[in-house]
Structure formats: C-alpha cells, structure tokens
Image 1 (tube, protein in one colour):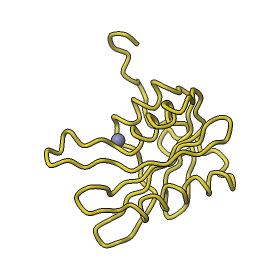
Image 2 (cartoon, rainbow, N blue to C red):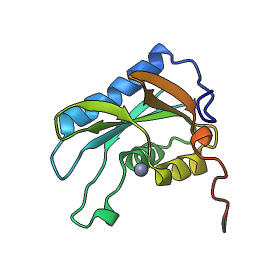
Image 3 (cartoon, rainbow, N blue to C red):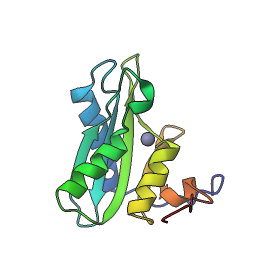
Length: 142
Ligand SMILES: [Zn+2]
C-alpha cells in the first residue's frame, strides 16, 4: 500500500490504454492549446481518446479526462473501466500523469469504481480512483 493506495495488477490492456493516452497527445500536441491526452476504456473494452483544451483564460480550460468522458458518453457509453492521462512537457517528454482533483470528482460521479493508471517511480501503477479521493465531495444532489 502506498499512502492509502492499494495497487492493482497492471495488465497488457492497461499498458495499451496508457500508450493510447501518450499517442494521442504526441500526435495532437500544440503548444498553448493541447498538452494533455487521456484514454478511457469502457467496461466492454472499447477505447476512447481525447486531448485537453487550454484557454487564454486558464480557468476555462477543460481537462482531457472530462472531454474523453463526454466523448464516450456521447457515443452511448455508460460504464467505464479505467482511465489514464498523459502530459506532454515543454521539453518534449511525454509521461503518464495523475488526474487533477476535479477530474477525480467528475470521473467517480460517473463511475464510482473506475480504475486509474498512474506513474510511480517510472512504472505504471493502477488503483481505484477512489483511493485518490478520500472523503469525496457529497454535497447537494449527490
Ligand atoms: Zn483534470
């Protein structure tokens, strides 16, 4: 256990998902517009990818995880297995990155038991998103 995280087995399908998040941002990286990619796997095994939308006013930027979730839902998907995001750094390196707090909240609103793939000491680490969100927001309407 790593600080409340219970590691799950990283499968070849998880490695493929992580690579998909890296591939999409390597292909579509555009400075000041797209620096993060995300890949989402449904419970049926289908993959969706998307990039984030940067904005001149930073607070209206939209995370890649939110966009890929909306893309999948718009295609009729309702059950989600795992998600991973990758960051294209200014030096050109691309690595899996951790989802921000808002994405942790959003994704667990739509799939409470969704898995997330992270990078820990250079290796992929899979865990439940809820492991990253103790005491999840439980406000009005939830
Ligand atoms: Zn986010």
